[in-house]
Amino acid sequence: MESLVVGDIAELRPNQGTLSLFTNEAGGILDDLIVTNTSEGHLYVVSNAGCWEKDLALMQDKVRELQNQGRDVGLEVLDNALLALQGPTAAQVLQAGVADDLRKLPFMTSAVMEVFGVSGCRVTRCGYTGEDGVEISVPVAGAVHLATAILKNPEVKLAGLAARDSLRLEAGLCLYGNDIDEHTTPVEGSLSWTLGKRRRAAMDFPGAKVIVPQLKGRVQRRRVGLMCEGAPMRAHSPILNMEGTKIGTVTSGCPSPSLKKNVAMGYVPCEYSRPGTMLLVEVRRKQQMAVVSKMPFVPTNYYTLK
Image (cartoon, rainbow, N blue to C red; front, side):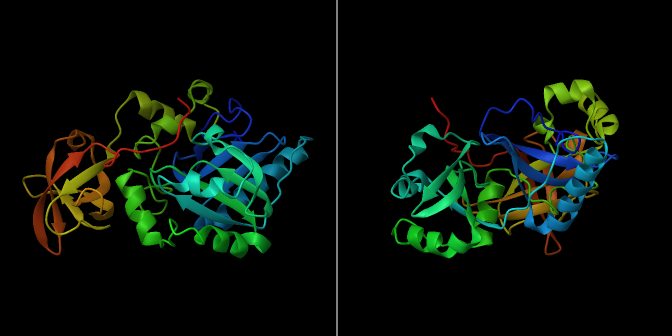
């Protein structure tokens, strides 16, 4: 797996997971994914459904290459659905349907358990909202039953992708295809934290010759957070300096329900990336003031063992 991603997978403890990145030889991001080192002796990988064909081909090609070298490696695709139960009371709601003590399941760890009568579910303390919660990988045959059982609790409401989009944006999290893509490096995307220390030293991941020097030097552009009043900034809105020259583009933007302000992220040259820098954003052909802001915009609330 480490021959495909930038993260330190070997150091993961049993049932611990990490967000990582598939990269190409040019240093671009092919996809973001979560890799978990399961206690059952295999790696459990969740990547984006929108990149399913590309990601699967990438892994299958690598498996064939390693098998041809006589390595003991295989790839199995699970026919599972993924339910994300998110929010401050998510664990409390789920606890009613599981025997395991969820207080012992911190952020980015997982365990296989029966959930509301559906066996073989992998429950992971994560969810890409910035809030506490779980993602439940459930065998397809039990997915509707499980969703219905969870929805019986009046605390739980169905939420569409627009709701998750505003939450992940408030948390400063990237959406693949919008904020990161094959033409963005992890350093440009402000994702240097995904690069394992050992991996940086070994320079043994795809694109390392491009990415590692960027850590020490300067990159031409960086992903930044932006906040503004007035009309909400949207993807593709031009970002301008105070002289009115276009310097970048918004990649994601929406009104923040939590802050009652508009938040966005986008790419600007390094010299404009410092928090507090005043810029202009063009929205519906009108220029409005925006300020470079630290992310997350709303503090995250992940569950960690004290």
